[in-house]
Length: 97
Image 1 (cartoon, rainbow, N blue to C red):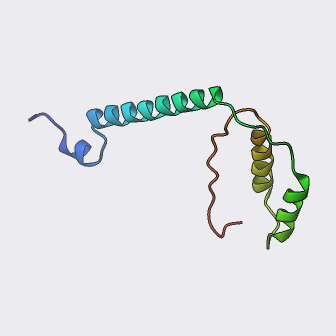
Image 2: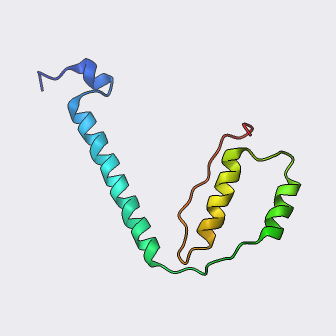
């Protein structure tokens, strides 16, 4: 259209682009909620704590885990004890501790 602000469009700030971005984010969130909801209905064998293996693994690490890493290990242990599959992505910066 002749009334379009090309600067807004080039910068990705045109209202139509923002609307599309928001719709895509909403669709992604809704699909993730549906997957998570389905996963909660599936069953999985709960695994009890295995302190011996955890201790062995941590002893072999060439570093001491950070507080955040320790917290994530505890969260994963709690998830493994639940009777449904866990949905978890663990990520971190390589070499940052």
